[in-house]
Image 1 (cartoon, rainbow, N blue to C red):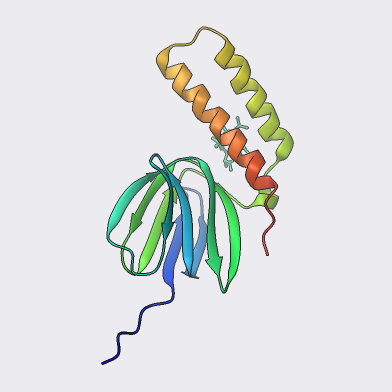
Image 2 (image 1 turned 180 degrees about the horizontal axis):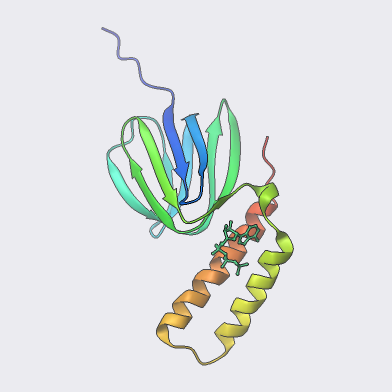
Length: 140
Ligand code: ATP
């Protein structure tokens, strides 16, 4: 029998608030603490943390971009399941809000912070940067 390789994997992106995306995709690019990973159909079983940043996936030859905040991904041969704190399309991102968040985080980082406050402020700055980047990415 011919070995027919699957051309798509099934992507599910959920947040606690909503189902953000669900459907067959040809490729997924995700940010993890170890750097960006690319996921193709037939990927080995794997679980990883997702860091706040841009993510992209290819549907019928077209790349779609979105912002994801911190989360978790489970991958197997047939699917990529992401649970993230928040997910936003470029056009949903309020650029002024992200700029204000960036400004606040920068100000906090200039002061005396506990380790926990430092980690939280760095994470807020990273989310703001990533939102500003994704807001410039057009889909379709
Ligand atoms: P802020 O300080 O502006 O709330 P944040 O990074 O702390 O930013 P999150 O905790 O990541 O915010 O998100 C809280 C909620 O606000 C989520 O529903 C998220 O989608 C929404 N949100 C946050 N920032 C933006 C933005 N710039 N544009 C659109 N929605 C945003």
